[in-house]
Image: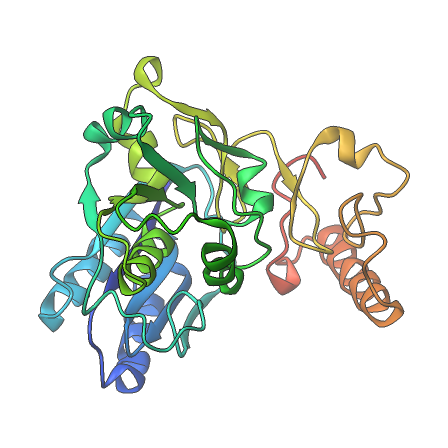
Length: 308
């Protein structure tokens, strides 16, 4: 039976977010929906998967709350559930930037629908910024997009300060996987005095869902935060696997490298791990291999769906 994968988020004031956790988790478990949702005072974010009935039950629960009226949903289907566990986590931020005064609840840039995105980013006077991390950008991005070269979203404000010109009238178009990071980035830049900030509504995933391949300005695949690792323009699992030592996407060429040790290291992380980290990864892989031989559920949320 196929499963529906839904990425969702909304910036909305949730002063009682801690109290929501138990009932939201019960909704997920009762409807056999797996994945992770994050709750914070600034809203909700996450990706989950389940049957059509289960996902609709989750949507119904959120609708009944009355505050989640502007939820961004992006859906795709897969043959097997790409998640092994169900979690609801409490966080300070639903996407971590680490700048206290930035709040999309109060102020954010202008949404651009996927159908209008090509025209906007084709304008040479518009600065196009990919707000994702470097390892995501390397898998795929839009034509003309600038890569901030960040390892995590906390570094994005520093990149803006150090790299962007001080022309606050410069029109800026930003995008990310599902729309959440670029929405928060738009709030940051507006607070810093930039006048015209656009961000892709629904992110790359909504663009791939909406814009035909023949009209697309997207190049490559899109990294996703589940066991599929990447998806292609039809939102089907892509060609990348994942290093479970560093969580980065890897190619078949990477896996043929002498620096690749399954579940432990790859060419991207072999020289950056401590002995303790290597030992922990080796023990985890040992337990995964044992579970696989016994036909038991995979421990630790690992991924052995394909290309093991």
